[in-house]
Image 1 (cartoon, helix red, strand yellow):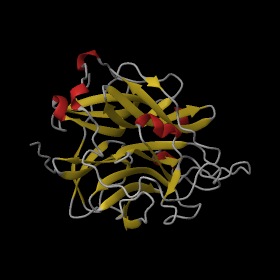
Image 2 (cartoon, helix red, strand yellow):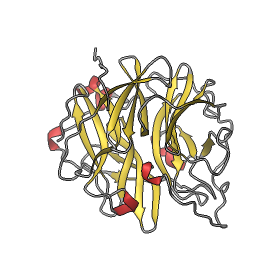
Image 3 (cartoon, helix red, strand yellow):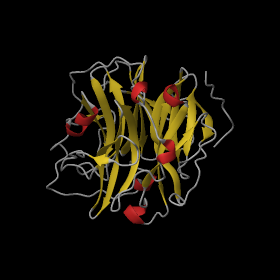
Length: 345
């Protein structure tokens, strides 16, 4: 059994905190987005593999020696906030796709069979009522897949809000209808909500998100995405963003990006959802392509059952000038047998 030992301390992102709210009479907040409503798949029973990155071990393989970082880059766009699944021999990536002219975050979807070439498929229709969408987090439920994410820059005449989509397959999430999350809890235009992530638990659905610059947790005991949601408060971690929940050896863990360093930090849950013990900061190697942002908005894939390794997908860049201070981010990969020592291809 793999044992994680605690050690003493260490999408959208923190650079959006002071963004101005754009107003445009032609944009209607309700044009493409609905408030919380009952869904055919509610309530959601927790699945043992709701957070499993490698869905079928038999089809999993990585030709590690054939890879080189960054594994994925696009000349005229920045990529970050990946959420990754491996299913039936194919890697599925949902991510933030950032463009400059005009500046806008979009949610993208791409696949790869070898992590050397990527096929970009249909991005999300983000609607006219928002300034973009960002930071998708993908989990499974009994009838398919769930994506939670946030509008970006603005939502109607207000700050970004949280949304959800559900679909029978990974490929269908892009076209699934969006619905607000926490609309009853944070119901004013002035509330800025980003970077959501779900935990499917026997206590209900747990939602991590950032409210302005504060990391918060909400719980839906019903197990339904439609709520009702109870705001639990702020966890006892350092400032974090870009969250990911998963279980390691029977214990709930949280991976987050610390602020302002933008390093990936792993925490293990304590007695409740607001109590966390820091395990360690992932020391990802610096290479020529990630000298400024080394491992931002990381996603951990536990493939130990397949080949004995954890894989970390992350964004890196050599500058923070382009894309309104985010830099021309590219996607890299590192692996570790124990979450302590990381190697890159």
